[in-house]
Length: 330
Ligand code: SF4
Image (cartoon, rainbow, N blue to C red; front, side):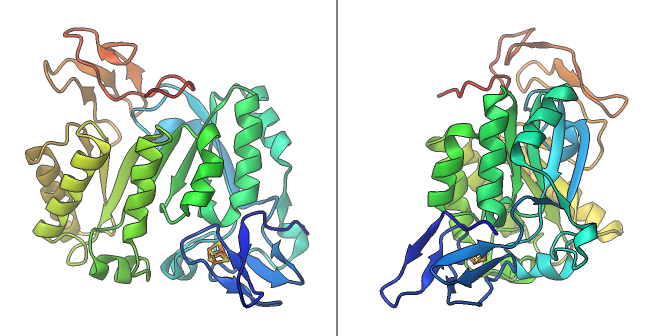
């Protein structure tokens, strides 16, 4: 079984896992909060290494990256395990199947090769939390980049700065699943009260590693839709990641009350300076924030470049936040 690369030996002799912000100390036979890393004699065993939970080939926009290599197809894969207890209770990828014949194992180089063979422009880790599959994700990213594929993660942002520093040279894009902007929201939606570290990681990914970041928030009526909380979130996105950061506001649960919360949240975004705020409808066009020219048309639910010249508006020349190259822009 593979061993973790990212850990620290503490003064007491325990091994501290440094992959995510729980920083679990793992004595022998103790499993971390993610349920996929276990302390062993002088190492941490990776129970999920090399196992995929899901795989698909689809437009990158399916993963709510709408300003990122538009029109491209990506190989989306994922592994087992989550960092948040709430996801372990509700998520589809929390528990590795007990039956070995139900476990799908694939080497990282095979993933990069499949992306090439299937003419996918990039590879995205989209299922399960990438932080808890750190070593496997890193292998996939390095080999995908070696094959000139772009790489992206859908993540809660609960990885550590040490983990991000290892991903950074190979990482192009992040869809950040930002669940709220208060202790209360994170306690209810993640069961993770110490959530502000997520903001630090996103800031670091943006400012130091120049990752393209889009933010997704699922709004739950009466949970994370307080007007002040939404305003604080929007101000943080605008002031830290930039006013052109795409913000995807989706309903966290069904019902008219949540639908109106989504509308309200989007209005808070627009009224407070975010230039690209998207709701659940996949047919929303992307328009130039200055002259309103359609840059990306999505009439049929898939993107068609309409008014872009590189990452500028073809009509008025306004630069728009559009990642179109694997060479990081500063
Ligand atoms: S990945 Fe996170 S939850 Fe899992 S053992 Fe490491 S620190 Fe703990």
